[in-house]
Length: 144
Image 1: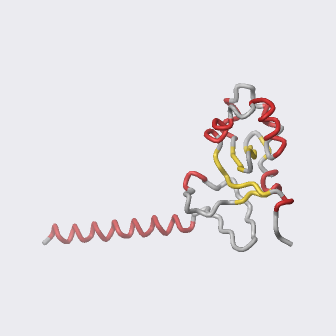
Image 2 (image 1 turned 90 degrees about the vertical axis):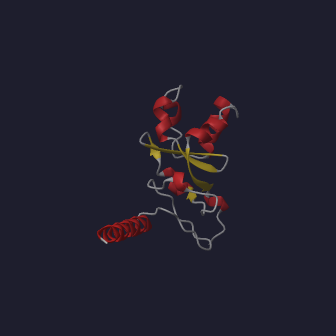
Image 3 (image 1 turned 90 degrees about the horizontal axis):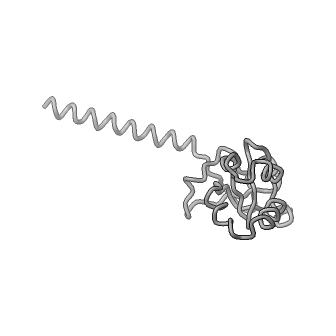
């Protein structure tokens, strides 16, 4: 009888722990909701590692991209996709300064990248960069 009670108490505590964990995730979920034509800027807190094919893809505007223009926060665009390459900067064989001026840019980065590497390093960029969302420049917004 004592073992049965302990087992039930253990199950109860486990259930409370699972509920608390799910509740915590619900309040700390950095997912982005897009309704209608509303574009919500991505934040640096977004963790793209938990995005799935069923997730709503985030959209990063030119304004949002431009905020990520430093050595400690470097986002770039390649082929319409936004990548956070901050962690790659210190190990870039050409040095940080070769990329730093292109942080927070779209076409500028892509043109410089293609000029330097052609398409030979594109798969490397997509592998080392953290996908942050699709890029949407002002000219392609269908609103107002």
